[in-house]
Image (tube, rainbow over all chains, first blue to last red; front, side, top):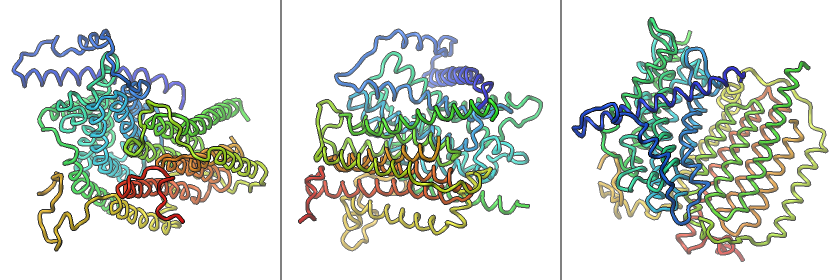
Length: 309
Length: 196
Length: 101
């Protein structure tokens, strides 16, 4: 990839940071509303928490596996940043991979490793249980996610994200494949430990994978969680919502606006649904979602055949 | 060759050497570390390096698929390693080898034979060039000329699912559905999320 | 980066995997040795595709087959390990002797 597009990487990271701040603020606003507190600018800002975590002394357990723990803690943020590398902003994309959709899948599979390592490295029972719960949940959502990613690829006859955007000229994919869109958003919540899928980081486990983290590690893991939701929302736009298509404003503006809309939808949903237990979700994932997404791919293929010239 | 070609080839060679060293080095580390989690993830790093080598060979889809499949497998393998190994965290140094000298000599002998063969055999010339869309080539291949392979793998994977569950499950269908297989709802220790 | 260099890397991976498969006492570590050997086979198959017959899909299909084989072998290996562990608390290759002799 040419050097000029590598220089876009800092800009993309800055955008990611900006959206993480927005996500955190929106989440805090909804939490304050739910608790009946009034909204203040200071209450929505992440900077006090960031400062506190940066200055906090690191807590540790008796015999942690420090290397694996740090890798697991920093991993989700790195995975989110790499997911953004294939999202097109208008005409520019950092890494124009011909297999962008599979790359996104690879990055979310890396989370299997990272979050389990964050649970294992802490050498604490609750953290370990959190890590194992994540693997149980991941086994359930991974196959539906793969099929939900296959549907837009089939419709566009390509694994390249830019070609998927180009194929949505007359009709956005969300109209054609709503089940795939819904399952994709559900899986974004699942791999970010968000909303109904927060069992691995659950309050019944004293924070689960977050239990023993402190200081910079905790900041990285919390930021990584928000960053994953942002990256998932940003990837949903070129896959299902037409990319940068829209009247009046330039492509990259529409990309940002649509990402913001999907992100706010995910933040609103976060507190509305109860926690799903991983063992219950396993049956839902395999018995309900896999056949549904397979049917979705079948319907999409039939539409492609019907519209073939 | 233009200067651009020379730099591109130099970069490719450097990246290849790095990836090869990571793959082989971490592969060897798998058997040298004490902690089971570290062994499993050393193997995962080795696989990611192999995926990178495949990317260098223009095999975009297969390279990324190797990373996807292998990291998933290593995460599941880690669960089983922790379950079955006596010293999973490596807190005590241990040496779980038998026949180390013989294994080493067999391995070195195999390497000498294979590498010697690789260097001495007169490999055939390249026939043709990679197509423009490498992924389409493999897709059309497994759905067209090599569909028997695809069907065979499908059947084998189904067999594996069934046999792995039969072997690993402590409860049979008679435990679940009663002696006459007529008890509904099924007697499971964990209630599922769908249905009764 | 030539065919010979890639095949030497594949040979190294196969040799290290073989060392692990022969020398490990624990069944799960033995399986990791087998995985490394199949890793080497993937590198070899991909390099043959690229340097000998890139216009045909055969090399790529072989890589797909080997990836499936790795998954299948791991699934069956862990299922067998679970079964014999449940039957007799066996976790080392030296103890899994029911069919020997």
